[in-house]
Every structure is written in C-alpha cells, then in structure tokens.
Image 1 (cartoon, rainbow, N blue to C red):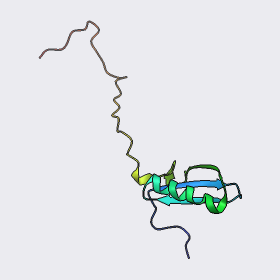
Image 2 (cartoon, one colour):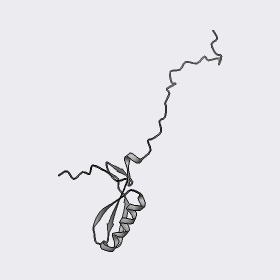
Image 3 (cartoon, rainbow, N blue to C red):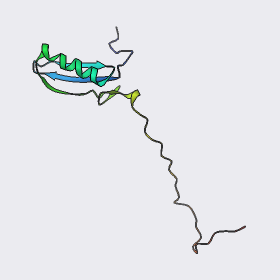
Image 4 (cartoon, rainbow, N blue to C red):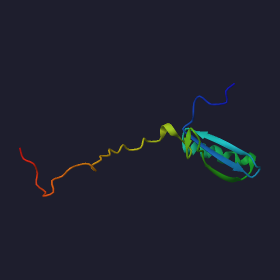
Length: 92
C-alpha cells in the first residue's frame, strides 16, 4: 500500500507536544487544523511548538495549488538599441 495520499487537505500544521510526540493536523480551513491541534493537548500535554508544514506539497501550511501564481513581468533588453546622438527622430 502506498502511504502517499491521493488528496491533500488545504491546510496542514505540525506540532510537537511535551510528551515528545510530533503530529500532523489537517483542515479545510486553517482554523480547523488549529482546533484539532489544540484538542490534542488533552491527550499529549502542552504544545512545545507548532508551525505550518513545508514540504513538496505545502508551503507554510498551505497546499501549493491554493497559492496565487507569481506575477508575470515582461523584460525588454534595450542594450543594443541605437539612438541618434543629436536627439532628433527620423522622419520619412
């Protein structure tokens, strides 16, 4: 059986508890994942630290497909543009 999930939840947090356990918490919203993380304190003790998961599928706890695409910036190279030295324009 392949342990890699086929469906990735939108938000994933990781937390380490005072009992030494390190667990993942998923949610449809960040608040759902946080609520599950806080509920686990009853079984595992206080939260030592928590953070959003960053791996091949997540960036700071958010599934990468949900992140907005970076803006497209058009670049023009004018290094070889020849301009007249006197500032005049060519007329036909």
